Length: 200
Image 1 (cartoon, rainbow, N blue to C red):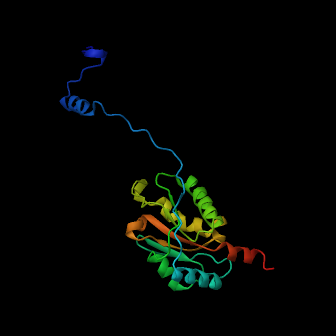
Image 2: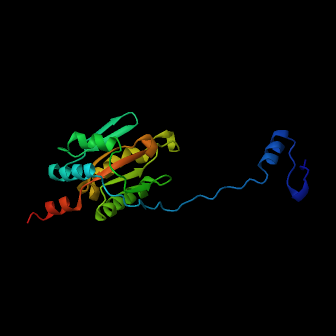
Image 3: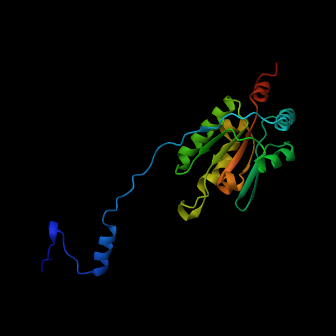
């Protein structure tokens, strides 16, 4: 038996739930997906405090050459630092005591794209002479199985490739800066990297 057709020639359904659903969804449009590439945000320059300048100068004198970044991870928290780095410096980074000078938000970016963005971000910040930056990687709540893909890969990206020569330490951010969904990253000075390349 042929189904009866309503206005517009669409089949009529005898299911009242389907009719209610259709009525509730009338006027609803699918949201267009935003596929724009995240932009680096450079913050308005703020002069370092005298104490911060002293710490950074001492840091440049103490760091070792081309050291890997051992990872410490507890629950949602993560941190890593080159060998020989003064633990007090890592504590200061963890407490958010260094001035944030730039940030990169990776929300909605797939891992294959995110790695290149992180490496370019670190290199550009280092070229500008910046020392402390923030990377927002998210907590993975929208990832398959709730596994934070970018967060678990970020330590490897910071310890390999071009970032390996630049990054001194990283820690999970304080709650007001994104908490376990973001990381503070401390960079070497341009001077210390040049000195290692050209000892003369």
